[in-house]
Length: 135
Image (cartoon, rainbow, N blue to C red):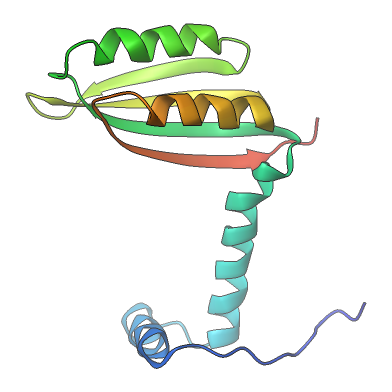
């Protein structure tokens, strides 16, 4: 495969306008460079789903006033201790808390963990930053 490949991509007008505005605001000169970086980020963020070993962070925002949410989140982390490395608990407001759950292990197992967390009543938002590991 050649070092560089050129191909056409169709982008909706509104997205093209946002790209132009972004380039002006950031001072970037190259649409190609912007698209390359966006594609690298997309592949990195979704590559973990291939089923291999993965490491990263699962961010969880939840309402701790919902009865049982804290204990359920703790129970789930214990159920997945084979992939949960560490956690950080942050009090955001009087009722909102954030968990940063550091994970490492098999991607299918981490997918299960994310699914369980998302199903807990009181959990408002779950966002993962996961990458493939070499192991």
